[in-house]
Structure formats: structure tokens, C-alpha cells
Image (tube, rainbow, N blue to C red; front, side, top):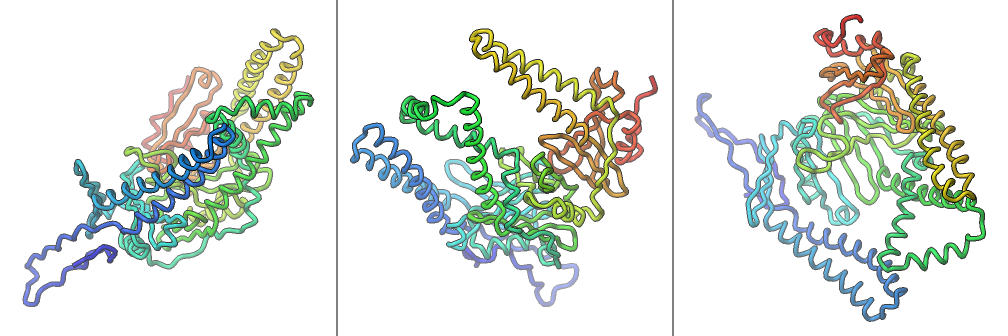
Length: 515
């Protein structure tokens, strides 16, 4: 009899003595197994820590608002205890109503509460396996298992949580011989790569978000007017441009700290391995450890991300293009598995990993698009400059002493928009080799999608009236991986056939007759 916490994979039936080749044997139906009971304690501890961390600023705000100490202790400590107890009850109920079982063909999860629901996933369709464990789960020896099927938005199934050894056995069972083949190490974390984290375009956004959170917390306790009055008392005598620069500098400092913290949490202890059959094994994480497996048969390519900060430092970030992974949520509303493979690192590291995964060198020199593509970007830049300047004229008309606002807006928008237009045009390009197709676009969000030719399903051609006049077209390649659609804007009509023929000569019907 199988007990909770034992190996979930049923043994193969043994033929009885005296049977013939014509005798049919039936596999025994595996029993429904329970999730690991330690998940109740783990979830309760995590919830208690989160509530306690929230209680500190909340209690401080209540004290500043004039609430008595006894009431503050009642709301904070009592709320923490009540929230922890509620979490324990919810997790106990979830443990009692949830069961799972695994046979050689399917893995199923059943939840019986007010109604009954069963989620089933074919073991032969499982392409990505992720085992994650936060700090508390690691100390208790349990982990959460997330499975994804081979479709682009394929079915997801989560088991939280299992004994760590059971989780690893389940991974090996689902991946069969792929989990035991010889591997080569592609990438191991260099702690010095943390210097690239602040170069991300997310850094100023993190800073603005951090400042916004401070104001939001102050608003909860009605302390925003007092806080603004205190801040203005400290900096009110400074010139407005100096104040603006100070706010920007503060946002960058806060964003830098947040970017470094996110990098360390996501990528600490990184190790990326590749199996002989092309499958990938990724281990990473500090507080939450993650062990993700990608089926090599579902890997369609890779993406190199190179925003301006990365390019300035000679760095890049690498994502995988594979079935069942990507950003956003799948058809069931569940978050997809992350496509991230290599963090911001020297470009040679990311490009070297990509070369091993693809089986051929990453194209370094791409074919430029026609001059009309650059003109289109410059026209858009001029339109942006005009709109920003006209909008900045409004306060200057109402308050004449703000005459400098439209002047500053004109100068700043002109520098940024013209630079972005030229940078975008320089980056736009493509290349077709024997085994891959490389598509590059963007400036602030520059990315190079390198797709295996065998995984390209087809191409779509889109042409706006302005593109028709300029002799350009937008090509969208489709593949069963990532977003499923990879867009390359403003391709010359003479360049387009080379791209769409990578999906076979049948796509020649996309060509338009001359004239």
C-alpha cells in the first residue's frame, strides 16, 4: 500500500508464471495520495512573517495618528494572530480536500469540497517541470511542483507541496530518461554580474514605485499633508530644476537598491545545464529556490534582450522560446513559467549559451532595412516632439512665469526622440542562416529573437497605407513557443521573400504581384 510521502510512481506489473504472450495484463490503478502535511506549518509561518512585517509600518502610522498604544497592539498583534490562524485553517482544509495520483500515462489532481473538480495532465505531454521552495519550505524539506504541457498556452498543474525527494522522483518520472542523461554546464552565476542590474530599464520604474508606496502608506493614515509640508519645509527654498533633479536622483537610488535586491533573489546560486537531447535544467533563487526543466523538443529558439544600459556595459539577458513558457497568463488564468535563462551578464556569456542551445553561432551582423524605415521613425519622432511641446505650452500660457517649461520640453523631447529614432533604425535588422532566423528590433526595449527554422510554422504580412507608399511591410513569424508571434517591422519588399521562404515554398503566395 502506498502511503503519503512515498514514491508516487506506480511499479510496473510483474507477469504471473505460466502466462502466455497472448495473456493481457492490466496495470493496477494507483491510489490517491495526500499532499505533504508540512505545507500547513510552512504556509502559516510565511503568512505570519508577512503580516508581522506589515504590522510594523501600520502600527507606526497608527501611533503617529494619535491612536492609543493598547489599541495599536490589539490591531497589530491581534491581526497577525488572527491572520495566521486563518491561514492555518485554510491550508488544513486544502490539505484535507486535495489528492493526487500518478500512473504511467496521466497525473491527476482532485479537489473535493462543496463541489468536485479534477485536473488531469498526460505525462507524455509534460514539457516543463518547475520545483520551487521558499526559505521555510527548504528548511522543512518540502517543495511546490508546477507542470506545463507542450502547447503554447498549455495546461498547468500545481502540487503544493510535496516532500522534496518525492518531488524530485516525480520530475525524473515525468521527464523519463531525459532527467538522467549526461549534462554539460552552460552558465554558472558570477556574483560580479550584479553590477548590470541597475542598468535595466526597470530601475527608474522601481524607484517611482517605491516613492509611490511611501505616499500610499501615508495616505492610509491621512498623513500626506503633514509629510508634504515637512518635505517642502526642507527643500522649498531650492530652485525648481534642482528639486526636479533631486527627485530624479532619489528615484534612481531607490530603484538601484530594488534592482539589486531583485537580481540577488531571482538569480542567486544560478546554474544552467544542458542534456544531450537538448533539454535544459535551470536552478536559481535565494529565498525561493527554483528548479526548472525545459524539454529540448519544445525549444524553438532564444531571445537576447539588450536595452541601452546593457548595450553600454556590453551586457545582455537571455530568454528561451519554448512551448508552455512566456510572460503573462495561460488560458486557465495561471501564470506561465518564466522564460528567463541567463540574467544580465556579459554578452559573450548569453551569446555563448544561445549558441550551444541553438547548435550554431548567433548571427552578429544583421541585414539593415531600407532607408525608408529610418524616415518613418524620424517622422514619428517629430510628431512626438510637436505633441509634447504643445502640451507644455498650456501651463506657460496660464502662468507666464513658467515660460521655461515649453522650452525645456522642446529641448528634452527633441534629444530623446531623435536619439531613439536613430537608435531604433540602427538596431532594426534580420539575418537568415542555414539553421536559424534572427529578428532584431527596438531601442529602449531592444530584443533579438533567434528562431530555429524547423520550428517556424508560417509568416503573416501586414502593410499599412503608409508602408505601401514606402515599399515596406511588417512580417510576423509564428511558432509554437513564447508569445507564438514574432514581429519584424518595416522590411523591404525585396527582403521579405527570403524570410517567409524559411517556412517553405508554400508561403510564396504571400507575395503581391508587381505594381
